[in-house]
Amino acid sequence: MAEPLFIAQSKDPQYLLPQMANRHGLVAGATGTGKTVTLQVMAEAFSRIGVPVFAAELPEEQREVFIAHELEGISFKEMAAETGVNLNTLLGRKRNAVRHMRERLQGVYDEFRKS
Image 1 (cartoon, rainbow, N blue to C red):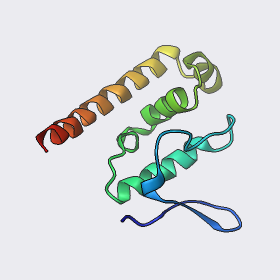
Image 2: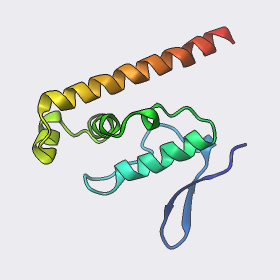
Image 3: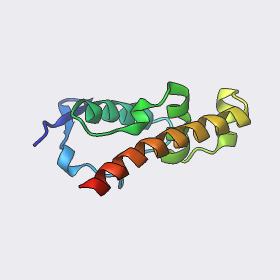
């Protein structure tokens, strides 16, 4: 069984048990509460123990757009207004992130089908 993953420090260190992790409600909170940083720390920890984490492989700009849009529910229009980045640039970053993850998932799917 994998070691607990250190994910935060408050009064005491906070750990996540890998066997208890899933995509349902794992990280929740209002905008600006540190979800993106928490997700990045978790992704890096999962990656270190051998769990495929495709978002961690993305270039930073693609990862930020993907997480903001897919996980935090921020619209492209909002991102463009907040960051000053052109809307089409944001859309392209998201498209490239999805393309990368689709390619990586195909490899996982192919491996799964072999077993």
